[in-house]
Image 1 (cartoon, rainbow, N blue to C red):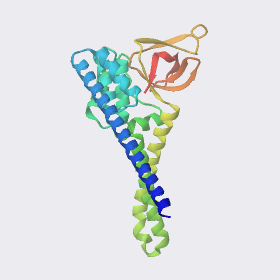
Image 2 (image 1 turned 90 degrees about the vertical axis):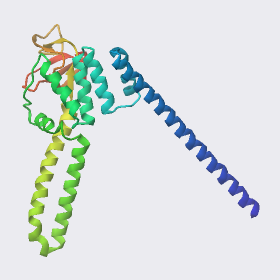
Image 3 (image 1 turned 30 degrees about the vertical axis):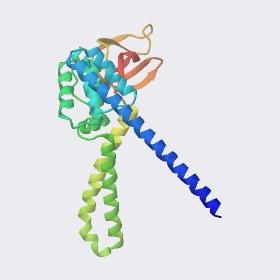
Image 4 (image 1 turned 180 degrees about the vertical axis):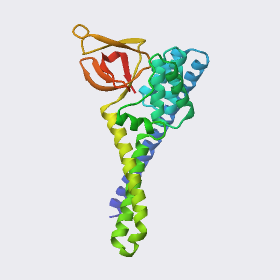
Length: 264
């Protein structure tokens, strides 16, 4: 009995040591990876300050490729592209940064700056779902809207449950139920509109200086109807063999080559 207990204790000790060693290795690897990331960020910042925008772009892009996707990385990448003269990819990365930090003043300022200087001026967002998205794009992240909707619905459900159980409280709960019901409805509409737009009408930015817009997905068979210029924002409706059908805020549609735009 004593021998069996000693054997079990020995195995437990070995298992515990193994877990501790594995944990230490994971922590060490994480710290080493963080040091590498910090080093790349530092190199990118130096390259940007030295006006070596090509190197800065390469370094920030390498961070994104390994999963370091933050508002700071996208913002700095956007700045590097903008300073290098690539306003399309500058705007693209500012919009990506906006998804992480919709209330950031610097991000919104840079977006407004490029929008004011691009060739194709776009003032209005006509479609209803796009209007809903634009209404909250600089205020809330998509997951924040989702949590707001869930919390508002939970509060309404709790009040409704109390009203159903405590009959004597119903008259006092009518107004709170009405208020939270309206909040839930508004939040659900905003959240639903955002989800619909992101899924079925994803945003994209033109990254080529000019790109011809055709009536169909073939240069030989379809006519050119107008041109889009760099930094124009579009909504993608469908893709077909290297071509995309898009819609502009004013409702105009057409086909352009997929390589001329990048998805936000």
